[in-house]
Length: 185
Picture (cartoon, rainbow, N blue to C red):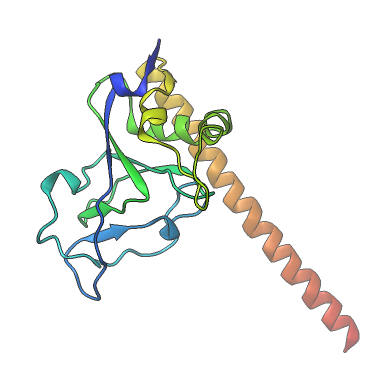
């Protein structure tokens, strides 16, 4: 089945706020993620929730999409121990259809074909930005829930393999350097 994103999810912008040293919720910003949408830092509560509308507090399964700048990615919100709000660099995608998994939608949005398509519509003179309209009109292919689970599982395993390969290369390089140094002494 194919449908536009607007038919399966609501899309809203993140909230504009000023981070603080000690807050009660996390303020998600693109700099906290790598190019694949994986968190690279341990989040700390750095935003006061006072004055933040309830609609801006992320819910389990929300998908955030970094639409501004050259580093575009989707990430699924799954922090169980901390509340958070996304910055205005993100669109928050809240799925209302039961036939699509947040993990699958995240994978679909991050797929190179989808990213290439979305980036072709990016506009802006100093900072390129993908509009809400473009995201709303994006056609999504929705396979069965079983296939969505399978796609996510395979992608998750490939991601783990990639991390292990990178670690192995790093260890090999360190070993090579140590062997060369040992040869000198």
